[in-house]
Length: 360
Image 1: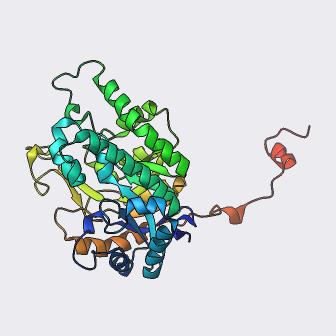
Image 2: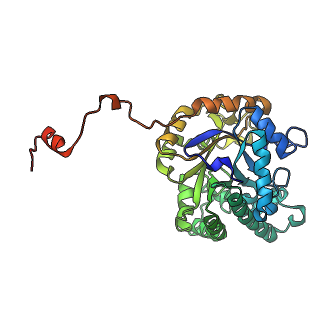
Image 3: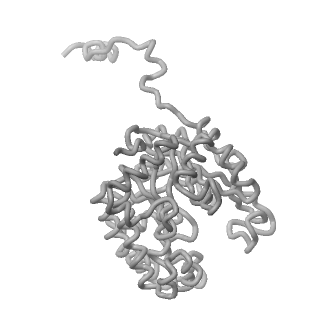
């Protein structure tokens, strides 16, 4: 059975990332229930987190085509498709600085907590399973985090010793290259969400990584403008610069309200008080009309997927509003120029005459 997510090209949507909605309570407790809920909200696709087995058993999906066909069928009956899988939590564990060991231990199975080497090996294997599972599901892109060895040194004080950054990216590349090769074998793009807290948190750091992995063809970007806005980056120019590597899109809003007390670092304040805050779609400052236009201009082929995060609005309201918001911004790319009605017959003889060149 084929997943309809791969049967059309261009910008598609709306989809919704389910990580923020996982719950023991219906309708968020099973794949069948949450797929039906997503469809009822107006979504056409769901992006599945793969930590745990509530919605998908990653090991089984990697090895069992019949199981994958059953997952596709469950979604089809509900009226949605699977847009992509996500290993954000497992990807985080591919590279963890010791300062964050205890904080990230909860992302791993209980038996691996306090065992960073075994935890890393488990995370790498999880990504390899995700490559195979994505192939069996007929998907062409996958979402993850890069992890971070260098994040404690993101601000250059105390002064970073020479070679530290280069060594950090060399080690990160060494861990990810075998994974990228698995995604190449599966025919799936591995899309790193550019995100503070990851070593791949802006364009410059992504370029360092890309060079370290020898410009691997499967090393791609999950574009989420909210994380760029909160770093005060040019999130529209980012598309111009990196569009050839942007293979996934999270539609998430944010706002930055500078004041006299704190800036991009946030002053250790909670999300409500920080100058930079995530907001529900339409409540922030991001110019989504221009984003959808640029992605269409560059021929982006993928899903527009809501990632709901907001420090003020309830998730149910955010999800209910999100599908319609994305739908309003979707662009069906024109197949002809708007002034074709005034076109003239063209041939080389006429063109030479118009330029005053005469016939040869």
